Structures are given as structure tokens and as C-alpha cells.
Length: 345
Ligand SMILES: Cc1cc2nc3c(=O)[nH]c(=O)nc-3n(C[C@H](O)[C@H](O)[C@H](O)COP(=O)(O)OP(=O)(O)OC[C@H]3O[C@@H](n4cnc5c(N)ncnc54)[C@H](O)[C@@H]3O)c2cc1C
Image (tube, rainbow, N blue to C red; front, side, top):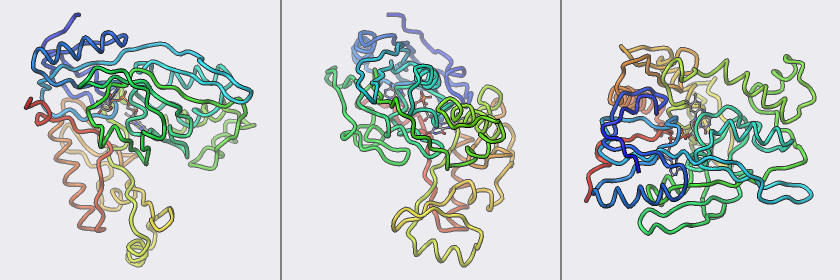
């Protein structure tokens, strides 16, 4: 087992934060994962599981064994008249799975095209985009429980999926290492094009009818226009979740801010965090090496050389300002990985 020491994670997180892992190891299969658990245990270190590093903000060096999940492989494991079950290794790049499914003529993942990161991290926050969430095609996952080293199959009902949320971010945080994920994809296509600019982009591209491939191409085009490319400017996508507030509270805000957008969800209204941040005047603001993206205010960026602690401080200022101006608390979507996590008790 080749463990590296004091290993720079700069190329392993899309914010491009230059911090070091005390120990670093890449797992290519379940046996590697089991070995890493044993090693961390005998060295008295915590394990920190890393996928593509596109949803983490690293604050300070990591005094733990960082386990980069690189388990590959996509296979068809079941098929019936209408559906196919595809199972993918946790280290497969998400977009490679989307591409694979489209090449097989399957539908279900096209709206989630070009989301960065790995398959194994996707259930963590029930990734979502353009009106679709992972949970609509998720079937089950395979995982290893760190405390017992037992292999488990975890089905959808257990995952408690919600908006950018699952049991793995809450009750079971840090408990399991996901090794494979299975998706039930459809042979029959039911296009979802009403969200965002998909319909307009399909027309502009001359890409009708709305087949899964065409929807995927349109989503990729929209994303490339709207979001900063982490290869050019460090970022982790949306830094905050869109808040949901009670209907009564929204009505009062609407009186004060008549243009405030809101999407009704029963007795709650979801408000775009990007609108709040832009209204509060943060869009495009730069502070040395870090800032708020000029086109997408929900995205905090590292122009190069910025530190995790600076981005945390900026995010806290934005949260305080939004609370003061609108009475709304913004919740972080990005996982903050700080030094407090590594104290072994
Ligand atoms: C430009 C950009 C756009 C984005 N757009 C979207 C979007 O539209 N929708 C969306 O939902 N997200 C979006 N994201 C966020 C991100 O891409 C997703 O959350 C993605 O699933 C993270 O995958 P990752 O492999 O990079 O995870 P990481 O950042 O490596 O890890 C995220 C968390 O999952 C844990 N983890 C990772 N792998 C495993 C595993 N195998 N087992 C157990 N725990 C694990 C980590 O410990 C960490 O807590 C975007 C990010 C960027 C940079």
C-alpha cells in the first residue's frame, strides 16, 4: 500500500486551495478501501474520503489519511422491457457515466450533464440540476462501514434524499465509504425541458426533437455559458443552498421587495440565493485573491493563491448581510473541511 506523506491537494480540489494531506492514498477497489481503514486505525488517524474535490472547501492542512476514491468500471447488471440497471464504481467521473448512459440510448441522467465530480459523491448531496435530482434514477449503493469494515447495500428508502441532502450528510456523516452506485435508467424517454433555458437553447441549436442526447448538449451549452470553469477559476459551484421560507414571510418580503422571485413548494417558498446575494450588492466583488463570481453570485471563487479561511470569512460576511437585509439565513452547500475534524478522541 503506497501511502504518500505531506501530499499537496491543490490539484485535488476545484477551489485550487494549496493545502497538504498528512497522509494520502488512492483506492482502486474495495480491498484498498479496507486496507486504508486498517492503516488509519493503526496510525491513530481519521480517514477523510475525497472524490473529485468539487464540493469541498479545505481550510488548513488535513491531519488525517486522505482516501481518494478511484474505483472504476461501469456495467449493466439487469435489464427488463423498460429499464436497465447500470452500476458504476465510486471513482468514475460523473460526466463519463452520463455519456455512457446516453451511448446506450438510456434516459434519466441527461439533465445532470456536466456536473463535476465522481459517482460516489453524487448521492451525498443528491446532486440536482435543471429540474432533475439523482434520486429519480438512484436504485441502491454499495458501501463499507468504517467502524466495522462490513459491506452494506443501501437502498433508496434509507438514503433520506432531500434538496442537496441525504442521510450521509447528517445522521450517517463520516460513517460509510461508498464504493459503487446503481442507477435504474429508462429505455423510454420522458423529456424534462421546462426548467431554465433548455427549451430555448434546444431551438437555438436546431436540436429538436428533445432526445436525451440533445437535452444533454443543451444543458452542457447552458452550463458552459453560465458557470466558471474550475480549470480556469477555482470554485465549487453553488456555495449556498437556495433557502425555503414560510409563505407568510415571503408575502411580507414581497411587499418590501416587489421583484423578489419565489417558487412555491406547498406552504414554503424557495427563494433563489443568487437573487438575494446580487440584490445585496455582492455580485462581482473581489477581495484580493478571492471573490464573488461576476456572472453567478452564488459561486465564490479563488482567482489563485486564496486560502480556505479567506473564503469562509467572505461567506460568513455574505450570510450576515443577507440575514440583516432579508431576515433569511443562507445555508452552505459546500462541505467545509477544517482542522477541528482531525482531533482523534
Ligand atoms: C462548476 C461546478 C458546478 C457544479 N454544479 C452542480 C450542480 O449543478 N448540482 C449539484 O448538485 N452540484 C453541483 N456542483 C457540486 C459538485 O459537483 C457535486 O456535489 C459533486 O457530486 C461532488 O463530487 P466530488 O466527487 O467532487 O465530491 P467531493 O468534493 O470530493 O466530496 C464531497 C463530499 O462527499 C464525500 N465523499 C466523496 N466521495 C465519497 C465516497 N465515495 N464515499 C463517501 N463519501 C464521499 C466527501 O468526503 C465530501 O464530504 C458543482 C460544482 C462545480 C465546481
